[in-house]
Every structure is written in structure tokens, then in C-alpha cells.
Length: 90
Image (cartoon, rainbow, N blue to C red; front, top):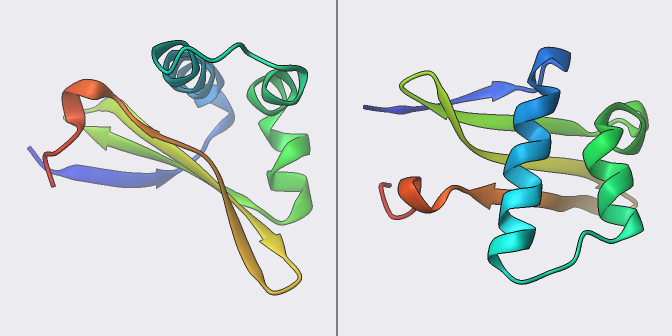
């Protein structure tokens, strides 16, 4: 049961949205306008700006995600989460 990290594909948009709305709800956070934009438009918010989105999969199921966006002096880590069931598994 290993974890595989894959590049985001457009057909994973629903998974991306579910992972991100779940961690916000779990943390008791409201989905703000900036969150909604990133969740609904990952292409425009991250990928078109030279960023990358990764989906973590375990046994074919998405268990996490992370977006990286270039900055002047490095990268910004955005929308990083792991499902509760997959936390602590290494």
C-alpha cells in the first residue's frame, strides 16, 4: 500500500475540490472567495502561472494534494492536505 504522487489532470477536478473543501470544513474554516477561486479554477490560479499541482494516491484513491506556485525567491506551497485516514502512514 504505497503512495504515488501524480501530476494533476483535468479529470481530477472533482477530487481536487473534494480534498480542499474537506480540510477547510474539518478545520472549521469557511470557504472564502479566494479558496473558491483556487478550488474551481486550478488551471488559472496555479498551472497557468507556472505552478504545479500534485495528487497523492494510495491504492488508486486520492488521499492528498498540494499546489506549488513560483515566487520571486522560491515557491509557495498552497492547498496542501492529506485525508485523515492517510495521515501518519509515512
